[in-house]
Amino acid sequence: MGARAETSAPIDYIALTRDRYDALGYPPYQWAELSDTPPWTPLARPLAESTVALIGSGGAYREGQTAFHWKDDTGVRRIPSADPATDIRVTHFAYDLEPAREDPNIVFPVDRLRELVDEGVIGGLAPTALGCMGGIYSVRRATEELAPAVVAEVTAMDVDLALLVPV
Amino acid sequence: MGLVARALEAAGVPTLCLTSAYSITASVNPPRAAFSDLPLGHTVGRPHDAEFQRNLLRRALTAAAAMDTPGTIAATGVTWDGDGSWKRRATPTGIESGKPVSGEPVSGEPVSDASADGDRGDTRNVRVDTPQYQYESDRLAAESGT
Image (cartoon, rainbow over all chains, first blue to last red; front, top):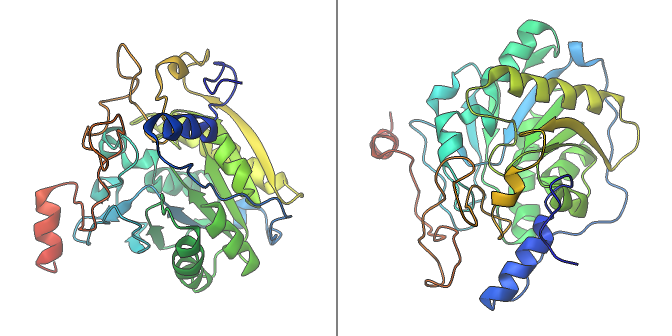
């Protein structure tokens, strides 16, 4: 079966990457594959009463902060969620950055989430949002470095839901 | 992000992963996910289209609130252009977005042609280990500690 998706179906990026790596003579990219039942914590209260933490892995940082480097940077940036998206910068090695630099909300929707608080869709937005950079090629480093760093930040926030926005 | 979501959920924090890469998300099997059929690099939608972005977020959050089965991937029903024609112009490589096979770029210009492995068609940027600032002024601001 070819990797080129029908237009009505989602693009199969795993198949596309496999084909591309084959064509380049690279060894296959090893995606994380987890078939066990994932951990689960029920929502404690209705959305309209829930405080949401934004975590984006599209490489968002705030002006004035050290930018991510492009080689398995497992750092996390604390970004005040009251600041407008115009203060957000974006850096990442693996996707077309121009649209996100034009409007960071498409990978780090701080402006939109504040608006959803005003609309009453969600109860609140955690004062600190987190920016990190996906595309960590090492599952071990994502698991042993990035994930615990994010968990430490978010569990200290007392939030009801973490909204994760990858690219 | 699925790995991070799993770790958060195990630590007692409910999560929702947005995604526009269905197969990647299905592979890592996060607790809750909401899929929108959009080009990579546009997880929340079109630049400067606030209502598009809010609509996607409302649908995703509402879907998450209704989930009761770990590993659910809901479809928000949000699409880029109705007929999916952007996919014919989308990248053949999967990781990059906006890199046209031929014809016009889908959404802005493709990423740099710089390649970590020479000019063999790998369109990702070189994975350098120094901070990659959006603007030179960002570098100055960060390095001056302001």
